[in-house]
Image (cartoon, each protein chain N blue to C red):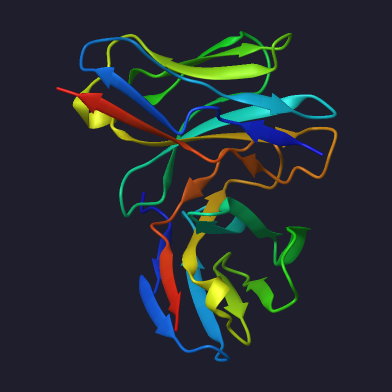
Length: 114
Length: 114
């Protein structure tokens, strides 16, 4: 079974631009979560989608948004990029939404904002 | 609010020796606890989880963890370390009495010396 895939793997953007990241979950997984990983803040939860609905949201500004499609694929968008948005963005899928389900992570998208 | 602490930024151990990576948590309800491992330039990989039942949980690659409710700990252990175990290890908690949003520790870098 193929793992979680994320595209693109690397991205360089300029401050003020917007960016869209894509995630394809493991086949059969219906929950997709997004995380931001930085050396200073560690791994921080952005949001979770399940059956095309946002189930949970972390403490990030409204510039960060996401969506999920009927095939469970998910996209994350960041508008008006700031230098502090430079990070590794990880997507994780799980079979369903709930506290007991382990997550399977993709390799991440490395975003650099200049 | 839930929290996770990994008190050691780095753990050094000789190959063949037992290893322990420490994790303590704080939740309002009952905890669901997870360990993940991250290799360089990769996403996180699921190792094991505690949901309920036996306090000693066995996972991938010979790792195990012991849930201790009185000490609110969930330490990761392995009887005999391998050089290939060198990686970044994350403990995570989800609170069954809360929003199910996972909280991750800051990570512990495990270095196994030949």
